[in-house]
Image (tube, rainbow, N blue to C red):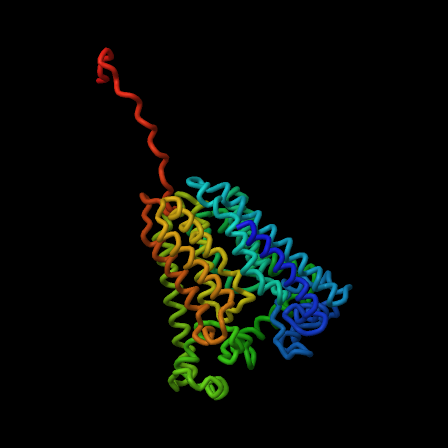
Length: 437
């Protein structure tokens, strides 16, 4: 594990250098974020989000609160700014690893089992972060907020916990699924503080940074995302993007005919149904997934409330898998969203190994590695035509749902560890000693 961790760190440093090179000589997500912040610093209004980025034609999809992180970099060249952003992300990964350490130290029972997986968790964390660091996305910041929330919950720092859940929702909408965690563990203080924390990031900070135009910027962003002539979400349903492995693209490739993609991949079997009903079917399936996740949370609530630290960890895993499974634009740069879902799998693998159930341990280890490779999109292109990343996410989600639905308040949701062997029996009593009664 140590050798793999060192290799992962070295690879991340290489990805940081690649980000600097790409931002300087080519185009990447960081380039769009940097130019959006530059226009906001120059006084742009809400119509900024209705215009595509000038050199690339990509949509400017960073909300006002996200651009705040890039405003201090405007005095630098884009290459130097990319280097600073890469260093910040490496520091955030260190904070995320520290949060995992703190969380595992506060687990009430069998914390040694989870602490034994810390190095493997760090390796997985750094491995899934490669795509994000390479493009300069904000995924690392969001996942660090989630893990910091878990650490703050373990230490009963409710205000810090509320901040950790509110910032990702202010930057993107779908991380709101993580708000199911305080509902499940019945953290009433967190539920009271969450709206105030969200208002801090969505209203107060934009007003302080942008002044009176903050409202116009927020309205322009929402209109460009959901209401405009070509909403941002519509661009997520492009079957020609091999990097997009979503539920919508899966159904569109199998059930509809795209004149560009299916003419290039002529061997791919498909139907010729209308596009709109297929997208509606994808939303119905999303609703079913969310309903099953909600029912699982409701069934698990008594156990989660009885052991809130471990319950928060398990609900974070379920919420992360549900989020990545239902979001409209999953790519390798967002693979880190699924990281919390792998933490229970690592613990189950370690428990099976300690119980001398070698076959089960090897099976769980191979399952975890295979799913991580698929979600990180390290598979051949021909496999990505069949959305193996989505299928791997569904497999992890199904394993978590199956595990949590089998839990009752009288049955621990942590994997068992072998009990200590009984002490050796002493010598038999001699004939002169009376037998014990």
